[in-house]
Amino acid sequence: MKSKWWGGLAAVLTAGAAALTMAQPAQAAAGFTVSGTRILDANGNTFVMRGVNHAHTWYQDRTPQALADIKALGANTVRVVLGSGQRWGPDSAANVSTVISQCKANRLICVLEVHDTTGYGEQSGAATLAQAVDYWISIKSALDGQENFVILNIGNEPYGNGSTASNWTADTKSAITRLRSAGFQHQIMVDAPNWGQDWQFIMRDNAASVFAADPQKNTVFSIHMYGVFDTAAEITDYLGRFQTANLPIVVGEFGFDHSDGNPDEDTIFATAQQRGIGYLGWSWSGNGGGVEYLDMVTGFNAAQLTTWGQRIFNGANGIKATSREATVFGGTSSPSPSSSASPSNPSSPSPSPSNPSSPSPSPSNPGTGGCTATYTVNNSWPGGFQGTVTVKAGAAAINGWTVTWTWPNGQRFTNSWNASVTSSGETVTARNAAYNGKLAAGGEASFGFTASRGTTNNAPSPIACAAS
Image (cartoon, rainbow, N blue to C red; front, side, top):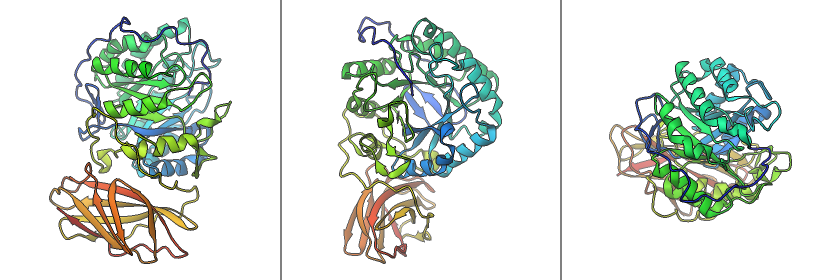
C-alpha cells in the first residue's frame, strides 16, 4: 500500500493517450503462465485471483491464523508482504518457506512481494528494484520448486511520483532479466510506479515492451487503485487498454476509501468480474498511519468484519460470490469473462471467529455413484461454527454431485456458498453449483457453510455422496 500520494491525476485517460502494442503469446514456463490476458495455473486452467493482502513482515505471529481465516471467508489468493532488509526484515529463506507452506496448507495461491521498494525516489530509505532482486536471489532456495503455488511480485509500488518514476521501464526490464538469468521460473508480477497508481501512465504505455523483455513471456502487470481511480471511466479505460493490447493485468491493491480520494470500488469489482481480471484488496488487518479504515477485520479478529471487510468478502462481485479455488488444489477452473457482472451475493454469511477449534474432519464415505465427501469443522465458537465439505470424484469423471447427511445434534445452517443447500428437519441435501459439478477422475470441489449449534457439535456420519 502507498503511504502517501502527492499531486493529482495530471489528466484523465483519453483516447489520444499512447496505445499499447499487442503482446507476444505465452511461451513454456513452469507453474503459472500467461496466455494473452489470462493467467493459467499449472494445470493449464484459467485462474482469476480473488484475495487480499496480509502484512506478514510486521505481524508474523498473526500469519497462520490470518491465512486460515482469509481462506475460510472464500479467498483463493493472498498477497504476502515481505521485507528485504532496507526498511523491514529481511525475512529469511526459512521464514518465507514457512509462509509458502502455510499458504499451501490453506489452499491459497501465494503472491510474495518485497515492500521495501515502496515509493522509491520520494520515500526515504526505500529500496531499489535492483536491491529487491538481490533479495529474491538470496532466498531462491525457498522458492525453487514452488512455481505451481507462488507468484513473485518483484517490488511493491517501486517509485513515487516525479521524474524518478521514468526509470520504471528500464529498471523493471533489468529486474525481470536478472531474475530469469538467476534461474527463476516463476510467474513474475510487476507493480506500477506513482505509488502503484500509474497516473503518469508509465506502466500503461510501456507494458508491451516490458512484457517482451521477459524471455518466458510470463509477466503480469499490477495496478493499485486508490484515489486516482475515483471514476468509472478511469477504471474501465485503464483496465480495458491492457486487455485490448492482449496483456495480463490484476488490481494488486485497492480499497473502498483512501486519504488521497475515494476510489470507485463498485466499478472495480464489477469490471474485474466482467473481464476476468484478478483483484487483491488491501488489507486483512493491522493498518496504521490514518488508514485504519482499510482493515477488513478489527484486530485480526475474523468475527469482526469491518464495513470494508463485509464489502469485499460478501458484497456484489465480491470474493464469496466469485472466487474459485486453483485447480492445483483440486478446485474448478475460473469461468471465462462474462459480458455482465455476476449477481449480487445473497445474504451475508456469519464471519468466522478468531479463536477456532482444531479442524475435525469426519471420515470420507463412499457415495453411490463415484464420489466421496469429507466434512471438516474449520472454526467454532459458542452457538455456531463454520465448516467445509470436500467432494472428490472416484476413478471416473462425473458431471454432478449430491451430498447428504443427517445432523446429529440439532445443528442448523445459517448460510452456505458454492453449493445449493436445502434442509428438511435434520436432513441436509447439498447439490453442486453450476460451475463445480463436473469433476475429472480424482478431481475435487468444495463448498462452505456456517451453522448454529448447541453445546454438542458432533460431526454427522455418514456423509453420503452420489454422482451423476
